[in-house]
Amino acid sequence: MRKKIVAGNWKMNKTLDEALALTSEVVNMIQDEVRGDVEVVLCTPALYLTTLKKYVENAPKIALGAQNCHEKASGAYTGEISAPMLKAAGIPYVIIGHSERRQYFAESNAQLAAKVDSALENGLTPIFCCGESLEQRQNEDYVNVVKTQLTESLFHLSADQLASVVIAYEPIWAIGTGLTASSEQAQEMHAALRAHLSSKYGSEVADGISILYGGSVGAGNAAELFACPDVDGGLVGGASLKSRDFTDIVKARQ
Ligand code: 13P
Image 1 (cartoon, rainbow, N blue to C red):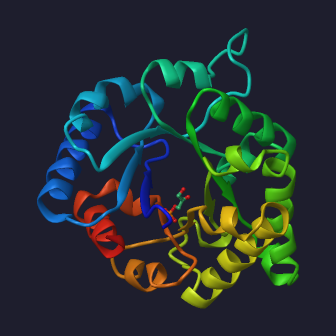
Image 2: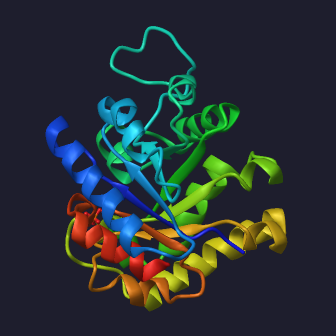
């Protein structure tokens, strides 16, 4: 049985006071309304994670995640945070390779491979993001583009290591645009990625990997996306900033 996961990626949003208010609302709503077996991950700005820990420590379904980490353990990398720091702070998840990091911070597949290694060495669960641009989608080569992202950043891992990775497929053209992939488009890519994992690691390993969909997931489209057999949950941007919308998305996955 694959883990069902709904992760919120807050990106660079919310002041501290707003973050505390949103987290307490989400914690209360999830505790009151969600009975099913779903893991909720709040990927907030790193600055707030240690403060938010006490808000989620009595909420067994809810965990915290960072939105990025550096590939090195420590050193002269002004402004960065490392996987050992997240581990020491008790933060279990980290998003790696979000398209905004790839686009605005020029993160390469090779660098992301090193980040995945550092996360795994420190016992963190990487939420590894992949996805094609609009231009790539229109070139009809989009499946190979995303398969290559997996090959170059994950295929050096052992099967045991891969089993600790969560994958998030986020077509760039669907992020923040209100343009969601249709459930057919999501299922096509998720199945192709699972087959790709299977070709290297075998079907037993591939069948155990949670693959989340991200890109304009909202309360109105979550149930249809989550009904796809290879869509195991969601990575939610804008809608994770509203407690009602986010909780409704979690309820659609339980
Ligand atoms: P939106 O849900 O705002 O489209 O963002 C998706 C995303 O990038 C999550 O990581």
